[in-house]
Amino acid sequence: MDDSAWLLDHFPKLVITGYRVTSPSSLYYNCVAWAVHDDRQWWQPGRVLTNWYWPPGIARDESVATYVAALATAGYTPCADTSLVPDIEKIAVLGDAHGEFTHVARQLANGWWASKLGIRQDIEHASLSALEGTDYGTVVVIMQRPRIP
Amino acid sequence: MSLYWQDWGGQRSAFTQNTATTAVAFVWERDITRPDLATGESLVRVFQALADEWYNATAHFSNVQRMTRHPAYQAIIRLGRPAVPGILYELEVRPHFWFTALEAITGQNPVPLESDVMEARAAWLAWGRQHGYLR
Image 1 (tube, rainbow over the protein chains, first blue to last red):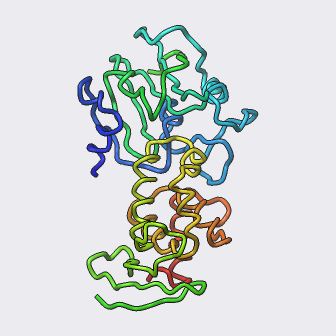
Image 2: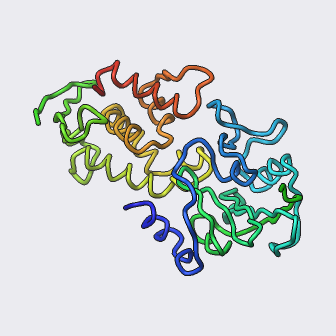
Image 3: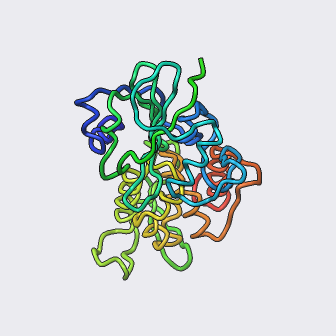
């Protein structure tokens, strides 16, 4: 199965709402890194490899709350909704039914979203809800910070 | 293709030289049926099915612990040392976080301190060549 087939198999709503692939696959960085514009580190509790990063002082579990705390170190604070606001950059944190972090997507200035899909590619997608489902669960926290020009 | 046998830990495995795939010198073609495989399928087929299942189920995950606790990954670890050439082949042609399984099965970790993910991959592939799993 090629990557596009895989993508549509796991996230079929993407084909309806619109998406485009914007990078090759990479084991160097994940969605958490990509949320903070970092394509050189894999944000992951522990530091088994030198390209793994986890903010100092943050717990090392997989809960949504812990990942929210990690993202707060990059200047994000919780906010109410995903409405597009000029000069504000928002991220959406997704989690499963057990409260475990699964994914984070970053809102682009045009209202689309940027996501790094694990070790697979980065995509830009029109709909945030297109990623919700069995694999990533649901959006549970929205955060924001001033958009960096 | 030339067939040859190799003995790992008392289990004979058959390999064929694969001239079509240059990334890895040999491909694990078939194996004696292990008594714990209820399906009776060759270990190679069992491994490849598990590897495909794991890759497709977890390559979009962002947390390595979440990836490696997947049942297919744990099943591959339970296959033991005969799975090592298959894992190294996967690591070569379709990189993913195989390091935990390799360390769990072999009890070794050839990755130098201060290695990034691709350096870790290179260290395991070099280990595979050194120990006769890859050429």
